[in-house]
Length: 382
Image (cartoon, rainbow, N blue to C red; front, side, top):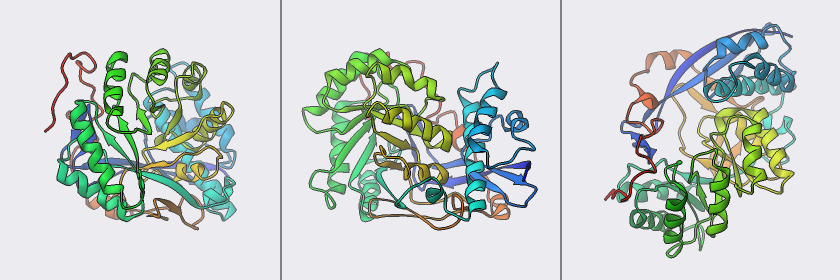
């Protein structure tokens, strides 16, 4: 069996609300979702969502190879971009190809991916997360109320601009989830918007009012010394790692005691998730999958490792033309029985309904302000 080709598609996800974080937001709530389809001479195709960046440059590393050799092909892709490096957007292409390879491997075995990877249970515990920085209080309450109806007991708020706003909004999340838990788990995500002392002051002020499970991405992703200092200074766990591209980027933070919850981005692939989870497990650290919406393959891996904390559930819908064999219920994700990762696509529907700029908007959260972390006064949002 050989890999013979690939197709790259782009669909869109309509969130039904503005989505973003402290760095910016997409007001339309419509974002693009890249899809990769790997083709084989046996007619079995691997489907994955995530990123199609640099796929044309990476494909020669797997062309003509047996797709079942997933771990070896992952390393061939890393080696293929040795000189320019695999970090950043290129790593997204590697991760999406990797997820498509795992989809093929599980389809050939006639098993859902979670079973192939060794999971005992199809259920993956989750927490609610709305990318909610642009929502007013009423819409915030409605969003987390809808997540509470699915059984979620914990929620993560986007914040970091103003302590009073964050406390008020966290209480709204807490009240919405209170129907399922006496003390709902609360997390705050600052998306790398603070310097070290800002982080200590902000989190300490919130902790005088509320109990935080973790503070997420408080500092720049590579700041091992800063994260370690913050972890010692506050009660909340420090969670970070979703934007680290490669196992080697995690080691300095782990070795410095800089991360209490090791986060792994859903778009970086199954093999990456498994390797980071093993490295974290060897240090008695939990891992948490970040950004699960249509990234179905990697949540199967989350079901199969022993140190998984709840997975971030950002939305209950699916992108245009994408059907995923999973259900959001009982406060988590229930994976299905379809062989592979359970992703099916309707290419004609995708082609008929595309419009807009999505994440590529200049006002979106992927564009960092040049004054982030450098202001003396915080910004009020209400």
